Length: 60
Image 1 (cartoon, rainbow, N blue to C red):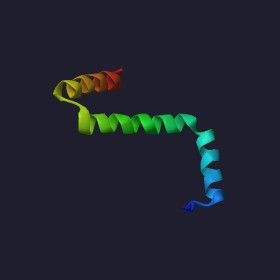
Image 2: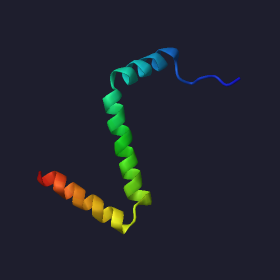
Image 3: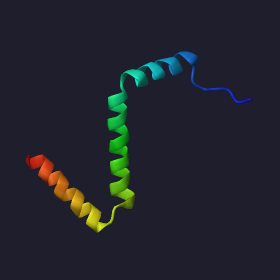
């Protein structure tokens, strides 16, 4: 049987933080997805489109 390396108190604290910070978790997850897409999956057309969207957003 494998033992959990994380203490019961730490698991409880992590669950409490996660429950209180759903919006932060979503932002972190989406940011990670965006970076992964840009780094590993996007082609030149995707990158140009994203660049335009970012430019519009920054100038609004």
